[in-house]
Amino acid sequence: MPQRRSHVAPSAEQSELAAALAALRAGIESPVDFSPEAIAEAKSAAPDAPGLDLRDVPFVTLDPAGSKDLDQAMHLSRAGSGYQVRYAIADVPGFVKAGGALDAEARQRGQTLYLADGNIPLHPKVLSEGRASLLAGQERPALVWTFALDSAGAVTDFRLERALVRSRAQLDYVAAQKQLDAGQDGPLSLLPVIGVLRQELEAQRGGASLNLPDEDVVQKPDGTYGIERRHPLPIEDWNAQLSLMTGMAAAELMVGAKVGVLRTMPQPDEEAFTRFRRQTEALGRPWTAGRYGEYLRNLDKADPMTLPVLEQAVSLFRGAGYITFDGSVPPGDLEQAALGAPYAHATAPLRRLVDRWSLAICLAISEGKPAPDWARESLPELPDLMERAAQRASELNAETINRVEAALLHPLVGKNIDATVIELRGEARAAVQIAEPAVTASATVPESTKPGETVTLTLESADIAKGQVVLAA
Image 1 (cartoon, rainbow, N blue to C red):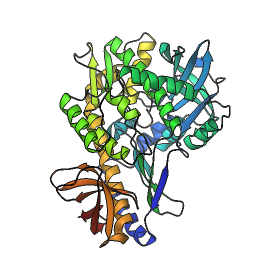
Image 2: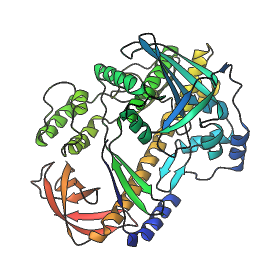
Image 3: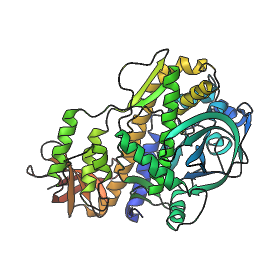
Image 4: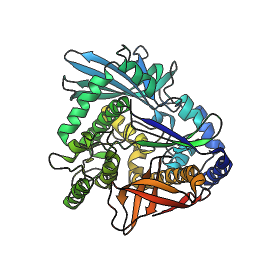
């Protein structure tokens, strides 16, 4: 099992931290409450009656424990020498009508924001955690992708249909991983097989997975806050491959029809590759041969130098954005470089705005109809809407973690702390990793310091309200 480490701020700092997080939430430049009109629409809107009944298919969901906004459900089976994957997606395009109050408020938000003490959803919870969510035991309208895979896991055919489904069970990552590790049969028995095959195909395409450790602010049952860090479980990577496969199918449909929205990321240029090679050499883990994706996949997660290498690799995964088109496919490289293929966001419509456009357009294409007018007319707005939403979410996450880390470090003000340098950030500045408590921070270091070295720092201050710490050699 990947290592899981939790650190909770001392009780003396918890009240100050709670106040700091409340102030941060209050200052979010995004609507928090929904209008009565939007809530009324969420309670009453319903998709057209599905023409296909798949309630007899034993779908299951797989998400973090306690999740209620369930976007996807799956059913995996063998089909001759290959496999069949059914992937049901919540029918948000059917629930959210263009031009209504619910649509307008979703466009303001762009995506669900996750905070230490809950979330600010993209849609009212009566919809995102209720009527549209693929909850176990509930009949739900869904947009169902059906994939035929050959023995190597490659897609040989696929289709998208609106259907009525009923999930049989809500599974969580940790429990499901334990069941697979124990060799127990279950609805996910084929997920490791298909997931590994899809990972191998990704490697053949030249794709790469960064897989940085997760860093989440958590609220304990007693109300205290802390930070939990862990590497993703294998089952999370296998599950992600189903979503990526669906996104690539959606991109194929939209590119073929010359209308839609893609998630793109350019290939790193030679200067970025050269810089990264030098950084890996300085860290004692040189990238000397093969593609960078292969190098990253083969890093040993137990090696203390892997995190500094992955932090440096972030520079290779920059420039992601959205591109829209209608009537002609824009010239140039449409690939998402980390995947080695064109790709679209199309599997999380309860939590991400752009997926509603992708799904509505793909369904129309699959049914031999023109893309909906509302989707075509608003396509040009999507990149800016999603960029603002992503920036807001990133800033909120960073500011939340900064405040919790300041609370974790506060009792150590005036003391010396050993830290590992993971990235140089200009003259005499560096990002450092403290082992106990596990905190990543910026620090002043000696000019001769190199990534991977351990330095002794003095914690001069830790301001919980502002989420700022001052560390210096």
